[in-house]
Image 1 (spheres, rainbow, N blue to C red):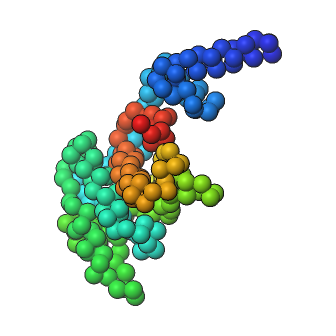
Image 2: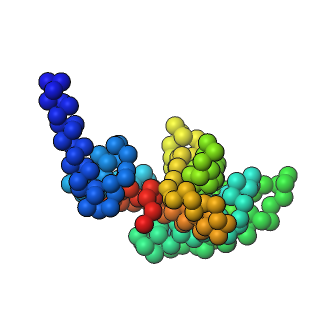
Image 3: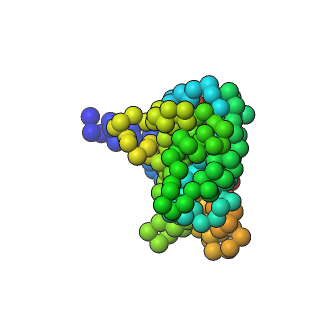
Length: 226
């Protein structure tokens, strides 16, 4: 049995190497090779929606009071990408409000007079608010270039103030991690770093939207450069 297991593993390794070479992906690690070959043979897996949004008017609000994401243009890109995918790309809701409306509403609050999340949504003219709190947005991990972002996401009913999703088991929100990989040498050029930040922001917006609809998962998505 031990011999058969090793033989099967070796066969899968060879199969992975051969198939991935056809797709120009032969430099992947062993685990990534297995994921890739399963993707090639079986097709992309289906990822279920985490929550079905009500058919109401929605606004996406990136609440970054701690300035985790230094550039406001990146925060705006996250919210705009998520909104476009939810409202126009997938038509999950009855309508959408531009994220600037929520950002402008939040800008009127004072340090000692923070607006409730549902009030921000109401002032923006939305019925449902998708609340996104950045926890981390970095280009470096453990001293090595590695773009990664982490968020907490929740859905709020603007009329009642109730949290619709996630449940009580995740009171702070649903955790979401987004990662990208790239050629390390390109990181050290400032223009490339800014482009990577933009790519991470846009990809974050897509991943936020995908929490709310069934989609094809790709183990290589966001992990490889062209």
